[in-house]
Amino acid sequence: MSPAAAGPAGILTALSDDLAAAVEYAGRSVVAIHARRRIPSSGVCWRPGAIVAASHTIAREEDISVTLAGGATIAATLAGRDESTDLALLRVDAPSGALPPAERGDPASLRVGHLVLAVGRPGESVTASLGVVSAVGGEWRTWHGGRIDRFVRLDVGIYDGFSGGALVEAGGRLLGVTTSGLARATAIAIPAATVDRVADQLLSGGGMARGYLGLASQPVRLPEALRGSLELGPEIGLVVVNVEPGGPADRAGVLLGDIIVGLDGTPVGDPADVLAALGPERVRRPLELRVLRAGRPATVTITVGERPRTRRR
Image (cartoon, rainbow, N blue to C red):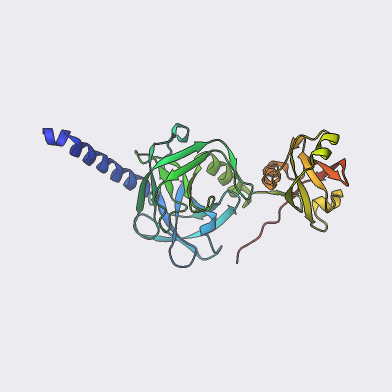
């Protein structure tokens, strides 16, 4: 190797070639999804015959097709979707060897500053965006109450058709699915552990069960004198502003004006706290609400209902 080739230019050329190879390798498993008007979105072959996509990009539930890396377009059917995690699952019958499942990397190894690639296919050609992992955190809840196993924020370009594509490490191995649908105009990676969990349920039942109480609430500050007399810890409670007739809260006797201060012994002060308590595992199980009613503490036990699943037209 010549001195020039071994210098900075040679190192950059090698890195450039490696990144291009990673995109080519990951791109075999990335498809274009035609399920909305104008620009297609991206999807990733997660398992044989199963493609993961971003739910917010699937505008219709019939007449869906996908374009493979080789240029062939085949029909797809929607197996199910979970809007709380912005994930959808499509079934396809691809020719043998035409759509290999993505090779997995190790998401647990992700650290802030790691180089990553967002690989999409908003058409016949693959696209890629190079960036870094800008933040890593623990489990979190989306604004729809979905549980994401790990918070991974990306500093990458968000191009048309980006959502539903693959987040890959420098070797082309899959770390998760990219989306801009869970944070306003911010690139987020849904980690593989979350995708696996949601995909299992979508394949088995077509949707994710979500609990609901049939009430609406908003934060309200509790007077200090009231908190002191009742030995309440939190400064904020949730005042009930709507109760759905015939819903779980209505059947349990929750009233307009009740102030929720605890769920199963845990203080609450934000509507997101209620959503966090309504995962699939809580459906048809009792949930104990501690409330203030006319200034006096009371306990209401609600049997958590299952949120009706709506179909998009």
